[in-house]
Image (tube, rainbow, N blue to C red; front, side, top):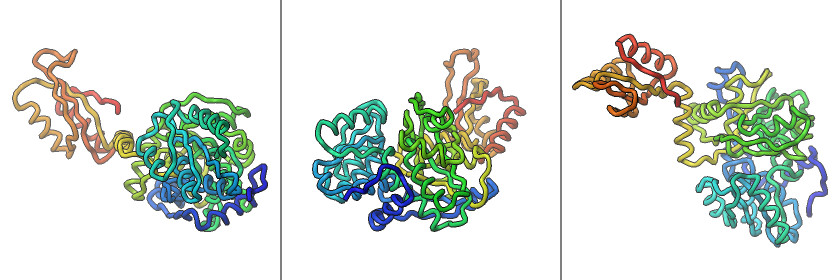
Length: 409
């Protein structure tokens, strides 16, 4: 029987927890001492990237479907998603024997599309972004009489996501701060409701990318409007417009909303890979990015970073890792103009070896515009041990007389 609800509430989240008990994974809450040493407090990671479908979205989708009367679902379900909600709906529909038709943007990474199809869903690729896919999905739903599952702006969906908050409080009852990614706001609305009902003094902070600040704007300006989207590696939270239902909850209960830059997200992804051995997508890493870069005014007590998902395709991961290493000073890009003479390149290589710089990539071009006759331009990508080592390399080469320029990543 469908739950009789109009608004999100703590009892609704408790009901969701009962429904989901045997259907979703209670994800690990692990200590991250390395990050704690960096920021000066105890840090814990709530690992929704280890959920059955690789993201928290399974909770909301499954709660929505299991709360409905089976007769309502016999025509099937329809939704729109950039990836994680799609897999959550597809997984739940397959489990319940329900047909799922899912609209995804045309530029969705192939791995996310295939993962959704592998779970038995019908995928329709349409629209340049999530919002265009969403409009197409709603129109299709009305034509065919299926049940529409909103990715975030629905009480049952929010309640499913809110079960994460119950798990955090059960596993770490003396938590002081919980940091949560924001897209349309369903995850944050559910988690903050679950926490503040019984522990009102716990600080809850939301995080968005500067490229998609819809909730930040909605809360700051006191109204909901579309925001232009920039390119972001946190595609899972790239939403133009905050939810009508989620925004009032967040405005009322959330202590702070902060924004993080693309390089900060990339660095967080690399740090999680190296230090915690966790694969996390851009949207899932924004919580740690905010903490590590001092974006939050204060973090009283034990701090939980919610890692909302880990569905990142290999090509994107490779680009993100390289960008993160550049931002951390672990890669150094140089352009050196030098004499075009036999042995000059070998001498440069020896000088780099002397300062323990590893040549990752090298381009040797005599035909570059602006290079004088008898000279050549060499572009280098060097592996370093970090920013201090990178500065040492640059200083040493300049002392040895090389004319060099630092290049941006």
